[in-house]
Length: 454
Ligand code: TYD
Ligand code: MG
Image (tube, rainbow, N blue to C red):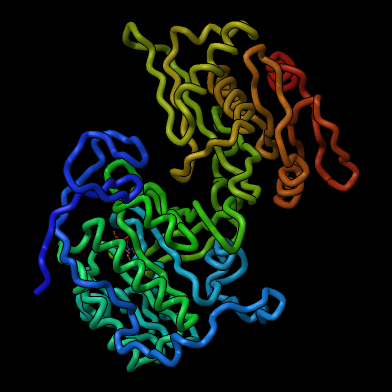
């Protein structure tokens, strides 16, 4: 048995220190060092039998000699995943899928294996084979090419892989894996790093894509060292409100594609369903004639999305009025209310204001400000807006309606969904001939009040 020694790893950058100290020497972060016992055994490759003849052959090649084939990407039977991965899964790449417990990471990946035509191996360190079978029954799908392995030792896993020769490997989760070349417990920084390194060398050597599930910590970051995110090719974040059915995949890093793509799913009793036309689902059709509802033309990632905003303005019962918002930045809500008070003369200081973006999604796009104002004014006035109008504009501190990026895309989406009017900033130049809907330009919030309520 090799001699064990104690070292201290920085959780932020992964730097190793011989003794504990308050600040990391490398990244200068405070209180990030954690103690770990490691063995001095030499680390080995995933390919433990070692092939000397192979290692003597030259490994370098001219860049122009390297063959590039379009087939290097696998098109998955899941349009949303293909989209976030930049057009399919790149062979030999390592993908990390992070997300809160219970959000549906295991469901998404098992469902993928069950739909794939390729031979896939789903390795679970969290559930037994029987539990995975139960989940598969819920999804009510089965597949001849989907293999399940419940194991946590990387050496055992690689042995099984050599027997089976899967074309795609899923690891659920990286925090449960353990390699025998490192002493510390599963989930520790040195284990995560060593197991990931073994998986990377496996992926690159055999050109097999590997998808890792990663836990996140209570701050919402991926658990384990930051270096994990540096090591993998793609980092995906699965998010959503557990109380709602919508789930969103965002790309945090992608060596083979854009990072502003986004995939949307709906969780139902039979697994996750792709939502190819989210705008239709996020807008309810039965809220006609209700005051306090408006529709915003927003852009999430690269996709135009029509979302519904609901506001409730009522007289405050207690001394201090309440302001509450779900899915919209609370500071921005206060700003918008202050603008309405100062620039348009609405006395909202003594009113409770509640704001809600339906579907439980969070929107950061400032272009929804105009719709927020419209919803608040509609509720305050208790007058319903016309149901076939929508808004795209940012509100400035002077009460001006500011232009927003990618307006053509927003207008085209509104047009496609049959809206008749869209309200935008008058400071934008946009050709409107191509659309059936009316484009109405506004200079400030007072213009909006005039157009909607006079
Ligand atoms: P899971 O994939 O286990 O989450 P994670 O791996 O991210 O921890 O998802 C579990 C949740 O999904 C659970 O709360 C139940 C729900 N679910 C459904 O609603 N429908 C289904 O068909 C399945 C399989 C799960
Ligand atoms: Mg899971």
